[in-house]
Amino acid sequence: MKLRLYNAILLRSADEPLCSGELRVDGGIIVGVGAPDKQFHADKEIDCGGNLLMSGFCNAHTHAAMSLFRGIADDLPLDKWLFDRVFPMEEHLTEEDIYWGTMLQVAEFVRSGITCFADMYFFIDAVHAAAKNANLCLALCCGSNSYSDYDIIEFLQKNYHKYSTLSDRVRYFPGLHAEYTCDEKLIADVADFAAESGAKTYIHLSETLKEVGECTVRHGGLTPPQYLHKLGFFDNGGLAAHCTYADKDDIALLKQCGVTPVINGGSNLKLASGVAPVAAMLSAGLAPALGTDGSASNNATSPFREMYLYSCLQKEALKDAAAVPAEEAIRAATETGYTALGFGGGTLRKGNFADAVLIDLAAPNMHPASDLRKNLVFSADVSNVLMTVAGGKIVYDRGRYDIGESLDDIYSQCEKRRDRLRRQAAFV
Ligand SMILES: [Zn+2]
Image 1 (cartoon, rainbow, N blue to C red):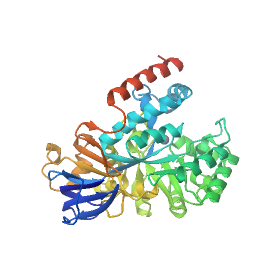
Image 2: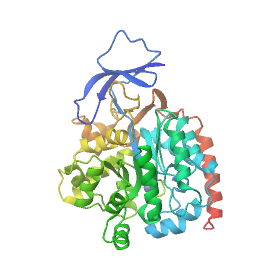
Image 3: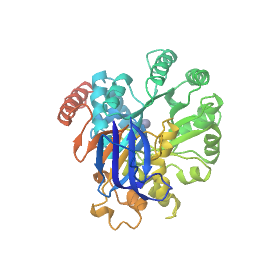
Image 4: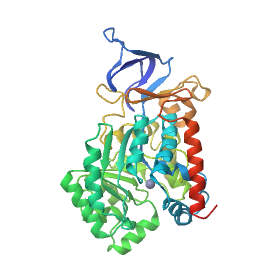
């Protein structure tokens, strides 16, 4: 299928100048960007109406099916949120729950311009089926811990080999939930598996002050990144969600190990966990990616809100309104996530995946168009998304979804399952 999206203002990457032009797509891959090419004969032509066409967003950290828990674990302290609400419901999740919960999130992703996501949750075959329905890029991240009732290395071997060779739009990351839920042998075994398979790892890291304090007590003064490094966990690099309390030495270590921090500003703010030191990471040469975390802790998966927080939380934390400009937020929401997850995308460049989002410039919040990058980060929101293209397929277009399931079915399935989970967790 050859697709031509013409009459657009192109934001090719966070840094390149904007230009008018078109995007040409063949077989899900960008084959041309910029000036028209009369030799290209498209099967389908789309007039972008002078709106902004840019890369789709990458949500580099989420637990998609936690959409089922949206609105039933709010305004609670972190330990109550986790132990009284989330864990009791998670115990009863079935594979079908995960499928429908992920479908709800997939609908929200395409509505929000997200074309790529990294998911850490259960029943990954169901997660994959839901992502495939919408042609989204999917990075499956193992989130096992010492309480998991199966052989984790066997599980990793099976899934790594299955999902690493399945499709260019799927990746698998061996990993663990977090330092505080995993014993030393397990961390060392996963590190060995990563070393043998040449894989990057994925983990929640230094999300709260409590986590860092307890880790230093348990492990002779070592912070979570230092402890994991000692066990070889990051020997091939990796991704680490949160890094809220990474200090100067931790940041230098993450840089040295090739670890990409994934910043979840909205979730950290709502759970009162803290503000990640993004400006210090950027100064040290790290390129953080953006995540939303799950819908029980955020509760929206909006890349616009996350870009805003990525920039503005630093301005407030440092009392410096020049800190982390809009362009950095755009880069974190697109290119760095795609690159860290090993996908060819995140910019509108020839050879990349045709993952793109069309942003409405006719809306009042985008006027005047003095600087579209600043508008995108500081005034745009999900309502500005007109169309989302994933691997050359139009999965969302002005209220119409092409994601393999109807919204009515997704909503009724999710409500039914949410009711059952509440009953089973006994807190109706
Ligand atoms: Zn998380």
